[in-house]
Amino acid sequence: MRGRVVVAVLGLVLWVGGCARHEAPLFTGEPFLVVWAGDADRQNSDFLAVLDADPTSASYGKVLRTYPVRSRGNEPNLLTAVPRPDRLVFATALLTSRTFVFDLRQPLAGRLLHVDEPDARRRLWAPQEPVSLPNGYVAIACSDPAGYRGDPREVVTAAGGLLELNSDGRRVRETSAADPTAHGFLFAPCGAALVAGGARIVTASTAHGYAASTQGERMPGIGVQIWKVEDLTLVKTIGLEAGPRGEENLGPLTARAMRQKPIVYVNTEGGGVYASDSIQTEVPSFRLVYDFGAGVHGGGAALTPDDRYYVVALPGKNRVASLDVADPWKPRPISSVRFDRDPMDSSRSRRGGPDTLTMSADGTRIAVSDYTVDVPGFFQDGDHRVYMMRLDPATGRLRIDGAFVDELTGEVGVNFNRTRWPHGETGPARPKGLLLVTPEPPPAPGK
View 1: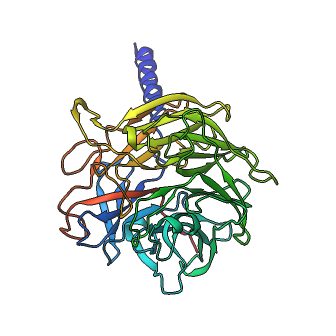
View 2: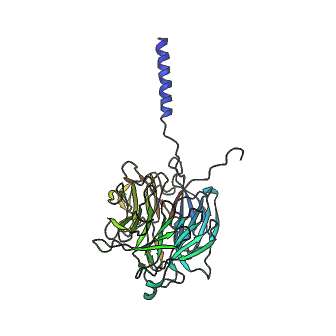
């Protein structure tokens, strides 16, 4: 009898130990999501918000901190797409042509480090996507020249370019995107990406007409440009060829480079996805590899770190979609998630409008903001929510994370149409740029 008791107790100990060994691992991803947001009525300061992005946290989805920038009406735009080793975040603003630099070594104890204020000497306006360079500097795609109005002659003669800032956010130089060998093209860099190897930058000329001085409509381009990283000189301008519909090439928007293969993707507002494996060659070219169809408008995009899946926002269709790009030249549709319905109750409609997205380092989480832009030449709104999505690395299927909820309403998706923020009762805001971040680790003992 005593032997049986000993065996039973030993079995219980082993069972408990086995359970302990099989506990879910601690969350090791990025615990914070930063959101670059504009005051909705432009009467109060724009700000950077820090949200709890730790799914194991009791306050998952909560707005933990905000950093007002002490200026309004900036039209907050994009953030650096990849976290930097120094934990600096560069944030662009379309209507004031400012770039804000935040020190987020500790996201809950960060600070606004510097503001690049354009002066009378500035030749480039409407900063779009910032790209971190290997030397720590930042190249920012600027779509419009200073004072751009948009009259017919100006549309085809004006040129944006690249603005280079040092790691402190101070101006180094400006390089024009004008290319006398590319007749009839618009030179309006918007989306930008550093190509694997660090020797080239690819920019997409989405459109002219983001500057505050614009008087006409925004004019879309069809060109992609390649630049040398070392001195930001222009290498080549490539025109994207239309497909069967005739408009797949309109408005090249977001450029994203694979990490393990020399492949670069550029999506367009016209619904096309173009690919190139010849960026580093003397005769680079792109070809249409997928078409999402008319009316998708195109939005932010990301590639998983294993180069297997391509995720893209389609604001015109209120969806975020994933493609399997195991064969880079024959993307295969995998998943599509609607944003114009309540994720918990499909009978309840929402405005939707997913546009900007950012992906976690492991590729399994994607944050999405529902808002595009409000500039004189173009306006596309959304419902001002921020969502967290999950991507299954085995299948590429997407789903909205139902646990990422608004701390005030309990609804899925953090609603930026609220009255109060940590910095005060400034009212609704429009979320745009996104980045998942990790705090700087504590110093080693004795240092």
